Image (cartoon, rainbow, N blue to C red):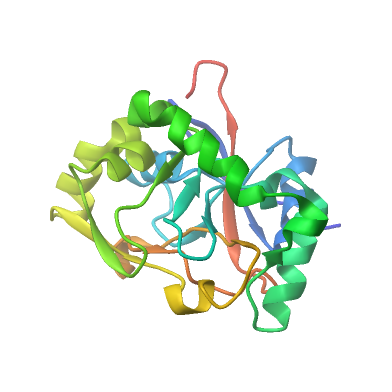
Length: 224
């Protein structure tokens, strides 16, 4: 097993690592450096604001989808918590499909996350374990939206003012028609595009079987 590459120490955050592998292998590599998950969008944004790499990365977040239902974003994806589920996603993507988890085999995954998102509606956006997107199709996420507050957290104002230099970014979604043509729960992932790519949010990718990059952070004791 390859080791993740140590990129940089980011003051106020921690040691930044890079792994380039299919998701399941990537998780093993990151864990060998005591990094539990790929980076969060908040931490990637903090790193970009403080001299870290500005290229795109996989994140620990996931879109969770079901027929005729709103898009839920899980702060910690089930795919990065369980290697078995990560492997299922890798195999689905290698067949140019989205990973579909049938209720009869895996239980009602969407229902579980729906309950979490509903319960967390009353919390501050930064504290939500899961939240809803405003639309199912492609749309722009405004910097003052609850979705932006949940994802960027305390980096939001600086990131939009200094890096985006605008009031919104594009989010690209799995086609709702594709979601509505199946009966299970689709779990995909959030790819946070690089600065040169406009910092867009890509939820539609099917390349978890590729050697794409994921940053990870070994947090400072005083870091976030």
